[in-house]
Every structure is written in C-alpha cells, then in structure tokens.
Image 1 (cartoon, rainbow, N blue to C red):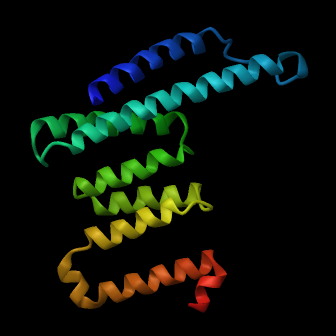
Image 2: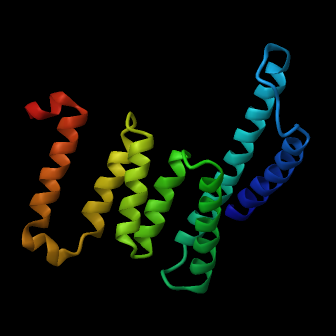
Length: 173
C-alpha cells in the first residue's frame, strides 16, 4: 500500500540522514580520500532518491482523491513542497521537474507546468520522456476553444519542428 511505501521511504530517509551526517562537510579531492568521498556521494544520492520516492508516494496518493477534496489538497501540497525542497538542494534533479509539471497541470497552473516540463526537457534532452510529457501537456490541457482558433495546428507544427530538430530523420516523414 502507499502508506507502507511512505513508511519505508521515511525510515530510509531517517537512516540515510544519520549516515550522511557522519561525513565531514568537506572531504579533500585526493586519492587518499577517494573512497570516503565516493561513499558520501552515494549516501547523498540515496538520501535524495528516498526523498524523491516519498514525494512520489504523496503525489500518487493525492491523485487517488477527487480534485478539491481536503485529502488531495493536503497530499499534493506535501508532495509539491518535497519536490521544491529537493530542487533547492539540487536544481538539476531532472525527474522532479516532470512530476512538478504534471502536478501543476492537474492544479490548473498550465504556464507553470509548461515551465517545469521545459526545464525537464533541458536537463534530459537525450530522453524521450520530457518530450512526451510536454506533448501530453499540450494535448490534454489546452482549452478546447483554443483548438478552433488554430492552436492545434500551431502545436502540431511546433511539435514537428521540435521532432525534426532533435531527430533529423523525422523531417523526412
């Protein structure tokens, strides 16, 4: 269950915070300290991953409630705050931007969602998912009235340009 997952990630986070706190703030970048420095980096990465997974659990559980319900608002708020804290520590944490983009779109904040997803695309240009996520945002969250005003054609042209720029062979289609 999501409650069990949250408890597991919370426990892991507490353990990893304790482990990480044992390392000195500065570790010299020399061969004598290489193993300690690598272990500190692995611990920090695992700590951030546990925090990310905990935020995802809150987000997923929030998604299970109807929009506007107190449970959804609380869980989504907690998840978004966790993602923002992760990005404050590491603004290059690409996957956090993806979830923030979806959460912003679900809250009706489409410009904010687009900004998050564009950051995701910038940080992970070699992956397909950032492009897919942006395409989904444009396809699902554009006002229907805008489609009749030519927005649909503009979005298709924009998507084709992006695809051709990223994958030259796509221009041949």
